[in-house]
Length: 416
Ligand code: AMP
Ligand code: GLY
Image 1: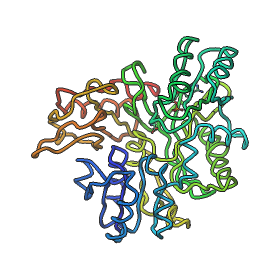
Image 2: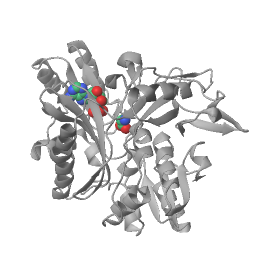
Image 3: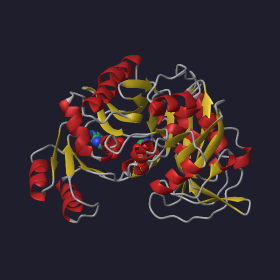
Image 4: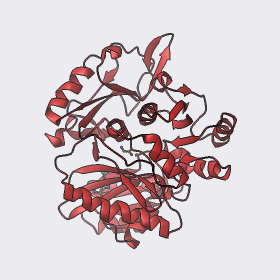
């Protein structure tokens, strides 16, 4: 039986640990740092996701057979390179390959070079040049800070004033670090997420899903880490999916091999179905959050098998199999999120919920479950169709009582 270490402590990692927990090949699961949810199925260890030396020591001392990395921050500091150099099996991309997420410019250049469909763009380090370019293009303008910014580095400027403010922020105030900005054309159409396990040129697709980034109903309010997600997107046809797989995911995996930085983890394509066809909005070098929480419950084959195959660069023993059901998940977040919010508020009723609950920011305090983050938990249910499933998931969400939580009431509105 295998011992697996999961790096990270959010809902995504709870969903990964939950899928591993269902594997007949997995004996023991450790999470670093984990959360109150993973504590029920794994042993949480008090190490930060970017404490590479500490994690390496833990994995060696405890004879971990496989490590699975959740967050991009750990990949970006080179945890995979370090573990591999020490001869340990790890699922995740090398530091060089992680640039597909950590550098917008690297990703855009790659797509241009290999004809992968995406919005036209230019990149700038100089404020005046960037502003001149923006002034010569139609609004809105899409301004992307070049670097890991935890989803906060994109500004859609509706007019010149907004563009000026954002460019100043990104290029002259060094608010984010060393300034470089990608300016790209504004695309329209429904967005969806396509995640694949990737080992070099081998691409193993997962079911499609859709995230809800804005805080409030009707896609209003500030951008968040994601307020809900579902699978079973009626507006994406089989043809669309095949196009994305053959013209985006597979060529990107091949391109990364050709560039000398093959992928060895999850490639997440944030895609948009525009009137001109499917185009890439962004790549991530990891599982999406909250998409993972709705996608991984659908896996029917043994997830350890695909993680191990990618980590060891060999063929999986079994074919990946997915359920034909659909899933939907609603995130309960602290009032005030993504701005400031209170923590430590008791949560009740969750033990009566008849659906999966993935913890995102919770803490057990003397036997009482309390809020401990912006996004607190996600209720995920499974069903045959979206309308029935929506009723079911919201009925389960209503069983949770906490004075300081809010959620969106319109998850999956694009599908209805
Ligand atoms: P990103 O961090 O690249 O995913 O961008 C965050 C959000 O900004 C995306 O989910 C889109 O909703 C929006 N966005 C990014 N790029 C574009 C674009 N070229 N056109 C329209 N919207 C965009
Ligand atoms: N759900 C978007 C992300 O994980 O970046």
